[in-house]
Every structure is written in structure tokens, then in C-alpha cells.
Length: 75
Image (cartoon, rainbow, N blue to C red; front, side):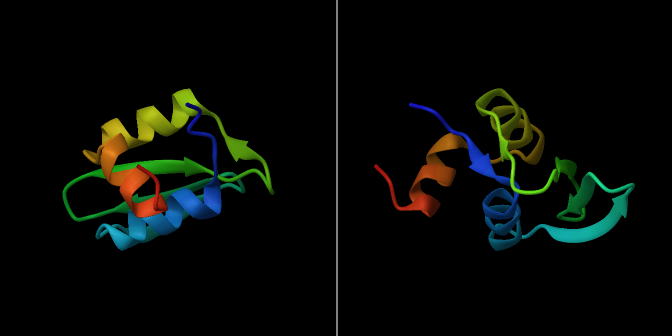
């Protein structure tokens, strides 16, 4: 099962799980933090974020694939 998501969807998931926007560096990275963990989200227009990068961001944010799928309304 692929986990390719738009940056907008992934950012919304992080925000719903306590992350807040910190800063934007250049035009492609938006930095989000929950006060303890900080993650970078590449934003390149409407391009989707690939499965490997989504998994890396989830690992860095200490959130799980199960939490993401539940948030997306999948089983």
C-alpha cells in the first residue's frame, strides 16, 4: 500500500497532532515543531511526497503509520 501524500495533507496531519509552524526556509521547506521534535516538510507546488519520505517524516515526528491511516479514515 502506498503512502504518497500531498504536502498539504501531511502538514494538516502534523498540525492535528500538536505540531505548529515554526519557519519556512527558502521556498521548499516548512519547519514544524511540537516543542520537542522538529520536522521539515518539503513543499514543491502540488507534487506528492513519496512513500519513503512520508515514512521518514513519521519516524522523525514520532507518529506511526497506523495513526496516519486512522486520521485518513482508512483501516
